[in-house]
Length: 383
Ligand SMILES: [Zn+2]
Image: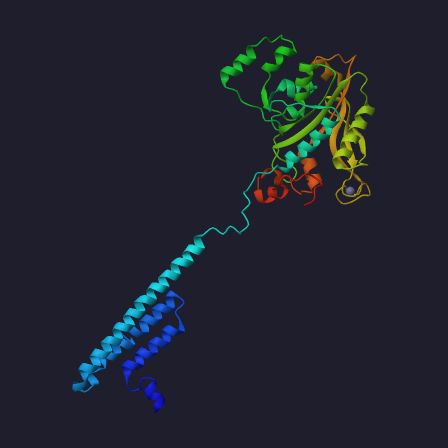
């Protein structure tokens, strides 16, 4: 009985609502959602405890209604004011947490800006260039749009050679007036005049740079010619209509096949590792005599024999030979005084071997997910 009286009498609905409200506020309101539920529970029009007090008035004896109404209104006012203060608190807390979220946290690690990276082909080309620069070679460049003279004729390709077929070579069509002008140039002219008249094409190898350099500088010379070349190939794992070559040319007095072999082995050992051997398999290229396919120690099995080298211990890597006297003559160099050698191969093929890429297309498709893995990394560097 005492307990009931102190707690505000269970039969007094006004005191009961007020007490319930105070307990709810005491328990704390930590979010906007909780606040809305509290507000609805007490002031909600349909089921709110405060409106329910007023709808109960009709059950009270008329004499007591006045006093009941006054007390209910006082409690309602108290609850409405308290809910107004709670609403302000919730809004203030929300604003504070928004501010915290928007603030810069200086303790967070920075985001690394995306930077460009060297393409694997560039890395390989530079590595090749470094090797030759150390051996005293210079680097020469030439036009990718060439003419038949530099690309074929001066390199001793006979007129009917299959490489000159439009099946293999991209010949360029000129505007009719330019074409006519070229044809009308002196038909009896020497080499000097024939060059600008010959049909234009996309160079099929880097060898025309040999002709340009020899004609311009004369002998002796020692240089490499890296660059892009074009052939009418369908794209597949080992072919592309555009690819990259590098070739070396040395012209001097007394240059022999022995010099060629020593130079090739030195280069391959620098690039693929000490102890890499070369063997020469005789073959024919119009611009060298003798000519050879260069095979090197298989880099996968170091010569023991594996699947990649078909058990032979050797893989084909380049072409090589001594510069054909006809080429020296067309380049304006006396073959009685000077001899030379040349060798070269695909930069793309070297990259596939060094990186272990299975497919040439990886080098040309520009997929950053792939290329980014080699960002600025030189061969042999730790991953
Ligand atoms: Zn092997």
